[in-house]
Length: 241
Image (tube, rainbow, N blue to C red; front, side, top):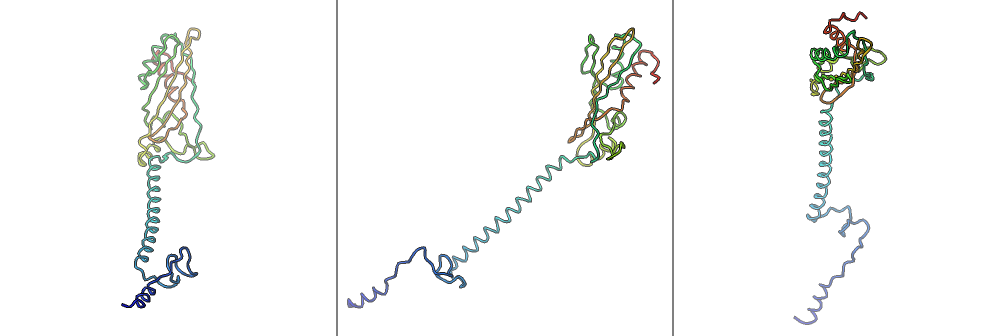
């Protein structure tokens, strides 16, 4: 081939260097085509579709994560559902009860142990010299709580109990809170009073299920039963007032 023709062909293959970072207005970045012209490159279309799918996948994953967190929170709170009605709570007050027994302190002390056993009270602390005994019952049934204690919630603006301990127990069982039971700690201090004995009783009460605990107030029924049983044990007449 003549030298002149080879130079002409070589001149036709010469390309101008591409200017990086410059593009014409109205063109797609990375392309020299106007933005309104569809891309014919399959690779670019697949890349755009891939980006769209990634965004859509991330959005769906975020939605699923929020749903799972909401369900987990509901399950967690569901195990701690309150079963006591939402009324006006009554502040619990310890009960103090005093009486005199016409019998020497040593006799009264021995009779107390027998009376406590008949009332299903176990001995926690016994100090014969000081005359102090602490009794406890940690397995009071809802029916016993209704007999001995005031329900800790009343209807707003009244003194009418909102419910009963037995009603609370039924709701608690239905809602997975377990059964309701009570606990009483009864402290007794005996001191000499002339030829007889003076007795001071102090009681604290608690009602609870698996998720809730409520300090409650005594009606004074157990304390009066305690005194009457003690008088009966010592062959003394019952209290008249």
